[in-house]
Image: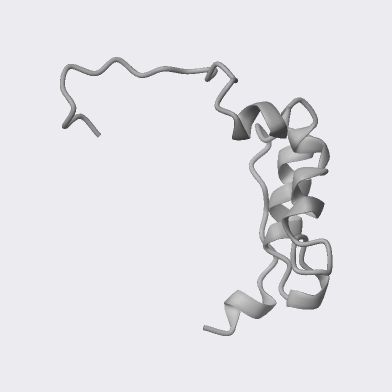
Length: 78
């Protein structure tokens, strides 16, 4: 259990710099230092470089085309 607090988390080399940075900030051990846990809340996360190409207003309005649409054969595919 103490490893959660003390262990250093290594990012895979195939992660982009932005992805590694975001994940590291989301997994910050001290909540006061963790991205999204301050006064700005989720807005701080949304401004992160990993999400630089996201138009949040279009996403909310469901106006964005998803980058991947899985093939499904029935409503029960998950």
